[in-house]
Length: 328
Ligand SMILES: NC(=O)c1ccc[n+]([C@@H]2O[C@H](COP(=O)([O-])OP(=O)(O)OC[C@H]3O[C@@H](n4cnc5c(N)ncnc54)[C@H](OP(=O)(O)O)[C@@H]3O)[C@@H](O)[C@H]2O)c1
Image 1 (cartoon, helix red, strand yellow):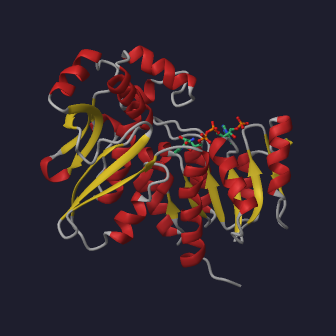
Image 2: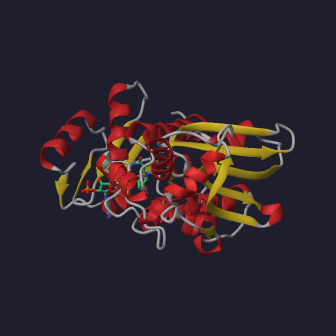
Image 3: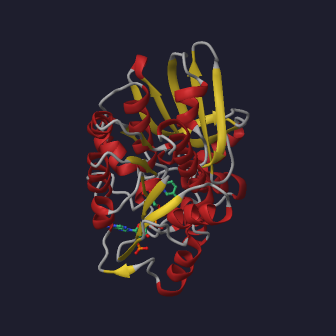
């Protein structure tokens, strides 16, 4: 199967490393970052691309754009791993739309286009008989989409609850464990590379809310947007509040909840017992799915990281290769 890989940052490089070091039987025929691109129908040497990116900051040649690769190169599946814009979904939305219109399968880690335009993209994929998969958009390495689609098939999903943002979880863990203030814990998270220079998306609960929108729209077929999520971040959580929770053998976690039957779609800091399955430490994510037959099933794992996110992408790619691409 031939791949076009658009975006060569942390996740794109993680995917390239996996392709280099594992025998995945994938041929990459196009690669692009924001400034350069490379096309070779015979297959690109990904080891050389990784080296060039490291040395020059560019994966290919100036003058070859991502859109040119998407609209004219020879490939079966687009891997789209460019930055997220939660309000417009661009530029990823345009890239994904163009690939689907050409009848190409799409795998993305980008929450923007899935949260903004899921139903339109799904319709386009169905019309062209191709797959659109986005495991990496929710909880990184945790295979939650696969579990909901396959492992828990036949169950009625009553609700989904979880810790969807590793940065917030890290900050709250450090505030509780080391009695740091919110500002001290945020500074530490920044120094360790867990928080962006502008942490607004994370600490205001927006990143977790986007993930709820993706789950609500794809699991229950709803048409929710970011504005429908009742969202409160962790930036007003104080050390005193954590200490008070501690006194009751509880702690505070930023919990995302979807319970369509009760019209709950909410992200908020919650006081929960320390023994609760959703109380995970550091940057971990946790998702609990409440079902009618299987009961409550909880998944815990890394929600971000280069190889962790690449793991989710590769799993989607191999799923499509093994189930939807005719071997010649
Ligand atoms: N990192 C994680 O752990 C993680 C986890 C889950 C989901 N995600 C999502 O995965 C996506 C990629 O994340 P990342 O951490 O790899 O981001 P990143 O390190 O910022 O890399 C983004 C890549 O996209 C390229 N790019 C930027 N604008 C572009 C454009 N208009 N056209 C083509 N390429 C463009 C950048 O080019 P340059 O190299 O030239 O700057 C860079 O190679 C994001 O949507 C993110 O939210 C990331």
